[in-house]
Length: 148
Image 1 (cartoon, helix red, strand yellow):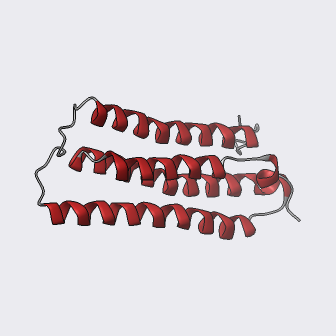
Image 2 (image 1 turned 45 degrees about the vertical axis):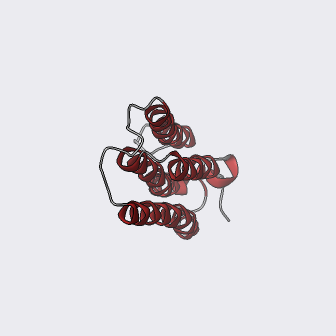
């Protein structure tokens, strides 16, 4: 998955992206199962006042949206500075990891909401956004191909 000198290849970038995508899907599957099977009580693992719970959900939702949006901006800006051709693959791989980690944080936020509040709606919004972000960031020949 790497060249003889240890630099990453497009195949290794795809493997990293697949792992991060599967981790994000894992948050969604486990979180949904915990909420729907009532392993997490209906009110979550904590007893928060209603207003505090709403603030927490809104803050984590906005943080997830912000992280996902920032992931696309950061990757685009950093990819523009990457060297052309095969010399840029290590930089573009690093950019991919940063971007997908930001997107994955939205999935973690959804999991936290599920655990603390037992709410599936806010969690599923974040999980859907995180999975979609991972798919949109997945490395393609165009995103890792030669740059002019």
